[in-house]
Image 1 (cartoon, one colour):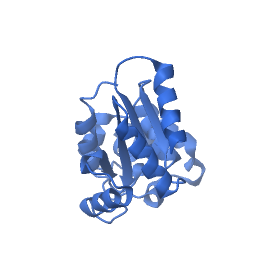
Image 2: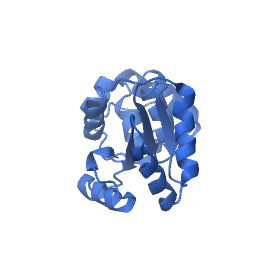
Image 3: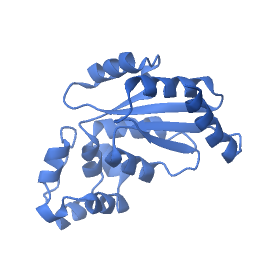
Image 4: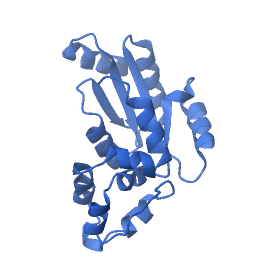
Length: 186
C-alpha cells in the first residue's frame, strides 16, 4: 500500500501547486478516452480499474482519501441493474463511505458517446436521430454503425464534434454527471 501512496504523492510533488488533484477511476479504455476529452486539466489523473484486483483498488482509494487537496470519483456502468443498486454494490464492494463519489453511467459509456452526436453526425453514419440513449449498451451502440466503422477511430471522431448540451438532453446520467462536475475547476 505504501507504494500507491508514494506514486500518488510523487505525482503531486512533481506538479507543485496548491490546487486540488483529482483521480477519476474508469472501467476501460473507451471510458478513459471519453474522460480525457471531457477533463483536460493537468491536475486530473484518469485510472482504469477494470483489471485491478479489488483489494488494490480499495488501497488506492484509501490512500487518496488520506492526502490533503486530493479527491477521487469512480465511474461504473449501470448494465441494466438500476442506478441505486449499482451505487450500493460499488459502495459496499469498494468500501466508499460517500455514495456521491460514484457516478453510474446509463447504460454503458457508449451511450454517452452517442448522446453527444449531432443529428448531422448521426446521418453521416447512416443513423436516424436518436433522442434518448439511456438504454444503449456497447453491443447496441456498435450495431448502429457499418462493419467498417466499428473501431476506435469512430469513437475519436465522435469526440471531435461532441456536443455536451445535446448529451445532457439525451442521457439522464450524463446530465447528472455534467451538473455535478461543471462547477469544479480543473
